[in-house]
Length: 254
Image (tube, rainbow, N blue to C red):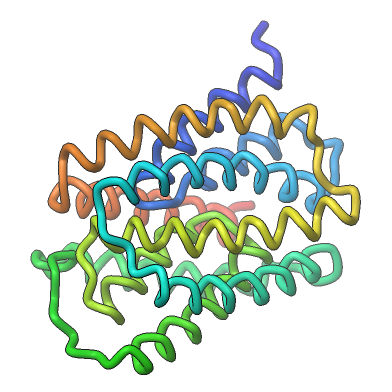
């Protein structure tokens, strides 16, 4: 029989591959970990998922940075805001149920899927003619919201970040994916710091998962860079639809 550790490591590899392209790897990694180790608390399992996600995203960002020009100053402001709100979201995990938020997120995801499918040029470069200060303001507000979501709930954060960079700042899918990785690193780091300080990371699981997630992230990034924006748009739609199914199950069936 395949051990639970091997199963979650396979899930971590798949999650790293998906995350590297458009985010959303938590849709695979998180539920598999919850099903494999139900004896642990929600906070402990969420904390454990953040460690492999952080390292896998680091590998992906390094690969993107070699091929894509990253606006470090802009994403730095957004990442700082997202870091703070993710820390707060992680703090609330053990004290407030996130079930009430899931129907709202489900509706938002359905709107995202319909919009992305209907607008064929979505994710192509679109000149927004924004000043730097306006771009920072839009990004920081979005970063606060998405960062809190990542710390509190988690799965699908990368996809929301990609959507933000495309719809609000006019980036194409390739640059949006690269910038999303930078912000996602900050949110994962905030959660890691909080969960590690409260003893809610199972490092005996997190470390082998991290190795698999990094390999998946490396391969996923190479694949995305080779295939380009059109492929990433299709992949994004698939991940969003998968997220809808996941939250639909949580809301209506679980």
